[in-house]
Length: 348
Image (cartoon, rainbow, N blue to C red; front, side, top):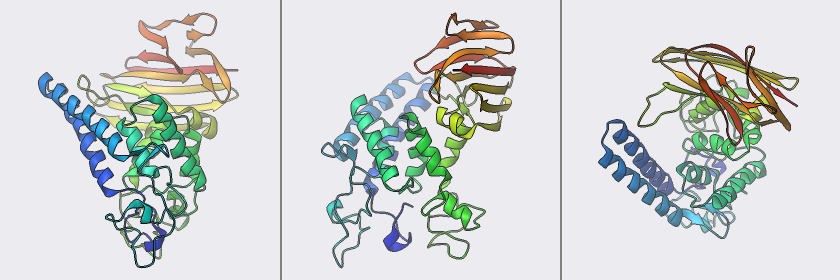
């Protein structure tokens, strides 16, 4: 559940309308149905669900976007009037307490809209993402998200160039935060932010409800993700990409995952302008290895695997044992098959 100081988190936050969460899940499910139908070879159903998903995106934007503030479902107004509950979903948003945040869309509302692809243009998406980041900063690098928003907010911040902000949010320990739970000796996740070792805060003290940050850790810090579509199943195509902000800020990490093909592992470190990645890919899988073209203000000058130069700013791209290497908008990407690899990228 989201941040709600008035009820000490014994009730859901009023910053995000419940109807928008229901609509978000409904429209997102249409995309999943299209993918499932495509995987089963049912092109007619895949096309039907894709059309419904696109229509759902458009309707979500029309229903919840506020053009005057550049965000979704903004919470506008001060403290709720006496006798009026600030978390009653039937009350207009102007009557609810905003707690000094979310006037340009709650963090959950804007994150859900971005994850859904609801903004109809890149320019509108950028405005929404900027307002999402500004709300996090304005709240002291903390979140108002609950069980729904947290899973979507962190990857959207990273996607729109705010990866460092996402990391700062995760590293914080002031209320409300995951670090606050840890600082109060909680060894398991709680159902809500107000939980401490001596007071569950109106919810369970052993709950996965706020566990939505874990995919971000595995994918953006641990650097391992799976590309899934109607043509490929989980971990058949592995995406090896550490978020640039994580590389520059943390300096190193390791991640191991057991897949249906076997173990995939990545260990990376960044020091002295060099990014080193040790990668193991199981038989039956391929991996796309990303090296950012710009890292901590430095430009990529060379990428190699062992003694084989894959890309340089002078020679361009090469190949690795017939596997392709390509220069994309923000990264040099090498695709490899099963085996163990030692990649290195030089920056200056």
